[in-house]
Length: 316
Image (cartoon, rainbow, N blue to C red):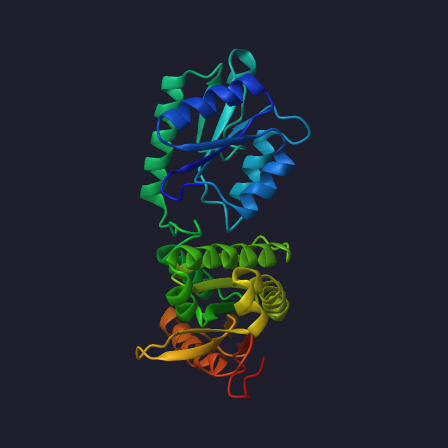
């Protein structure tokens, strides 16, 4: 799939409607693709999030309105714009829009001109409202700052975790940026799916940029979240290396001083800041604590998480 085109997921069980919309949008320069089942669509969204979703309200089993509620209540993918396909006539006019958090709607049968107009409007609105990372489509820095401050202001007991990949630059230098981007997309999926397994509506995942990610969960769940992320990351990461390097367990690449050096396979370091035993007054305080913890974590070989224990010796 092209990385430069906006990706649009069409969820529609009527083949002729789906094909019309797909052809219209592809002709306009988008990358449109369709599925006929909402459960399959959810797997697609969680593993390779699109830029926009078009869903029929009258899907079998799970309706498009229920999908809207599910996704918009998700702290990771709640930012994805959703256009709801609705029937013409009396049934379409009786929809309670206060209870369905769709961003826009289209009336069936779909007009190609109206489709292009609504899609363009949805993208323009999304660009104004969200600073999503263009590579992973996770919330970016502005959203991250707001989420952290919201929890500080509310006085909730939370854990803020900063994630960093070890030896990512060496991998990029040897294999190239395109393969490095695949690592970042994989990491985003690992983190979001691990956090989703906690089944908490108050969890949050963001992408600071590069190989830096964050997540926020209730403090009591941070160990479980970190262990899941490390387990899945360590299981998957070897598959991103060529067979010779994977067998050897290291690559020869360039270090930050420009010299040749031997680097082990990539690992993941997580620094966890919590206000469970100390009061965190502002974002700067949390960031300073995390910087020290991350430095300590990266000094230890292998994937690890290091947790703030307020004066006690931190450990993974």
